[in-house]
Length: 591
Image (tube, rainbow, N blue to C red; front, side, top):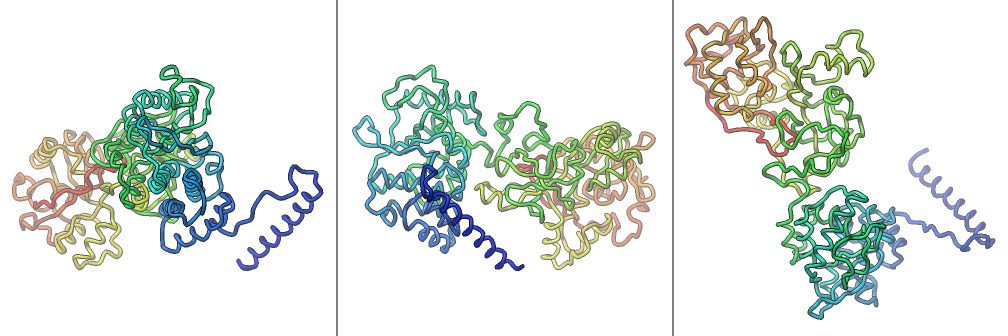
């Protein structure tokens, strides 16, 4: 059976079922004699039948044909109502209400109750100067619309308000403080995904041109600012808390993007409103403010050792997804499984975990002092004792042999997630595809270069003037200048090259772990295999101690004379922390 026959079979079956339902209803034994469920062939028709206004489907298809995104089409529908192309003959209030309901229905794809039950009604109020303002009454089911639809519904209401000549809302000081108390009380009794600060709530209420009102949804009542003239109840209104906190406050970047694109004035205050996650700069404690007791914290915001951002998409990562190396998942006690939702610092509020084996895994220090990296779950299993087969014994063996997790590995996030959430692109790890693009641009061929030894990396770097291969790039930006100089002095004065291996005293161990340089510890000494790229980024070879000689600088000696003075360019390696804000590379440096 081909696709066309399959869908025709579904359509025929639906027709038969509807015919039976109509026959049953026609006997008059139900509250109505009609089947209430309307049939729709696409999203546009579904929204039209949900709202019940003719012409909506045609306008939605028109906007989609123009290439508008779902959010842009929802705002354009509001313009259609404001300019009279839809809802002909409606009053001011009806136009605004129809625009809000239709926009929310479009954003939620017409499959939740929010457009009908989440918006209770729309009304007018009186400002102290005698002008009229718009009040939108939100109810509890608006939660199902999601933060984006909640925030955009207010923007649509403002856009239509301007077109029909309604003044902006001018709140009184006591009303502002009522919102502060009420949203805090709602958080305690019902919970919020994001809790804005009191000052953020004041900024929203004082500046929002629409009065975000609501029906009472909780039994609890406010203790202060009661019996206010323009607020009809003392009970907690869940709708105002959801739209203000999870809508406008949490979705501020996305709301700001649409405000800027449409050139809507009066929303400049969004720039002064702090967001739930940072747009750039220093980390914020808000990221951990709503931590639920008992949930594991894998990394603090932008902390070295946390997940390192890598841009890209795997075949099994979809929207709002994060790719994690299976070795990292195993090492973290399998708290993260495929499909687990995790809270992330950027770009969105959460992500669904998908295992991706092609990104870098975690780096750990074993109890014997060795620093190793596991790039797959098989690496861990092969390293385990033979008796460790089930998850419980594997976790026991990990705890018995791993002293510390130095780095959690990479986290794979699509560029599109930053675009969708209107977040500035964060600095990312210096990955193979980045290096391959630079090598290709310089005239080289990256085919088959996914891994290479240090000699090959140095030769390619010198030949084409590109950075070292990512496999030989270390986290130099996490090492302080003082520690860098100390490590250089220890390596130059006390280091020994022996059969292509670098031997260092234990004094260098802390700095090597910061850099994520893999090494072994034997007989109180540190042994680094394939150390040439590390050495050439650390030490000027012409100033080494005489005991170093030249014999150990390479197995093949292909152009690796330490005294030839050729430049080695390096990029600081992937910055640890879940990574939004750590520099991925440093300036080119000559050694």
